[in-house]
Image 1: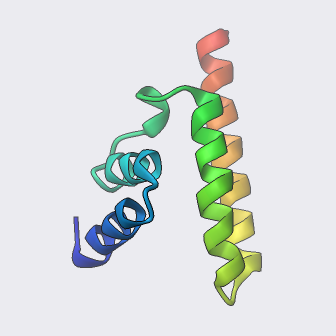
Image 2: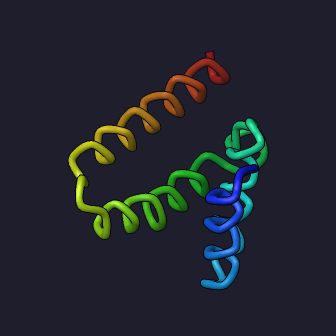
Length: 83
């Protein structure tokens, strides 16, 4: 993990968002968090944390597109597991 990523994880821990910190650590190390936590929990964490960060950022339009791509990818994975 680079310095910026470590700072993001520490920021989540200091905000007492331990589940979000775990998701960040998994993602930063190249793992797919959906393999380790339930799908609903993962989506809830994304909504609570990723979208909150987008509101604070100046370019929310670009990041909103990114979260939709995230959801599409996760739905694809869930559909593969069911099928």
